[in-house]
Length: 278
Image 1 (tube, rainbow, N blue to C red):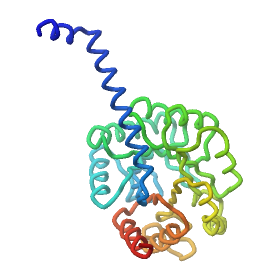
Image 2 (image 1 turned 180 degrees about the vertical axis):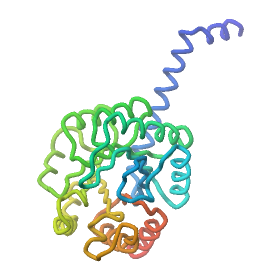
Image 3 (image 1 turned 30 degrees about the vertical axis):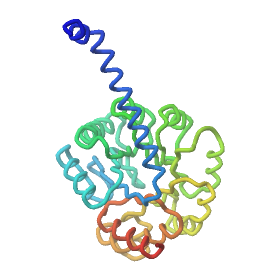
Image 4 (image 1 turned 90 degrees about the vertical axis):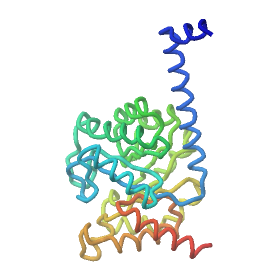
């Protein structure tokens, strides 16, 4: 017994046991994500922006205490995925530097992984370097890339075998990339708000049924965007009801993940949709 205790506390063995524990934790994290995305349940992705300039001020989180409060409230209201972004990508904005983006997202991801390790996380970034650091430091998570990606990003998510949100910005011809390489875990996002005009957004929305042939999860992010409020003469602050109307349309035409600022209201929309289709 004393021999076993002495063996266990040797520095080399401590490092070995730590390495094994880490590998086991990563295995179960990957298994969790695999089982999670095999679910037929419509998912809610809650938006949390650790930025000072997100287009919707109510989504801005300035410190880890706010991040935790937001996360707990979102989960209590029905969120399934927590999406963290550290660089505003609203049209016309100046992107934060890579250093600033990492400084913002790292503490948020760290506290969420520590306090709620079983909750699926998503990192909203278009930078492969940021995605790589996050995956290496915090383990598996969804990479939510609004840029449409790059060879470097594609290789990265394939190497780490994590879910990847492929945003094709209304250009259905870009979906040909799904025929190349290992893209089984890709999530399709039409990219509403990044297509170029409100008219183009609605043209893309009318074509959503075409995505069903790819048999992939479809993420739709409409929450309080200009596609919602501009045609009605509203503002992001006054577009909650209109957002729910468009989310219902998206559900009817194949959306399986709704990315939203307003989790409770989106959960209600999903419940009514499911009642209509039960």
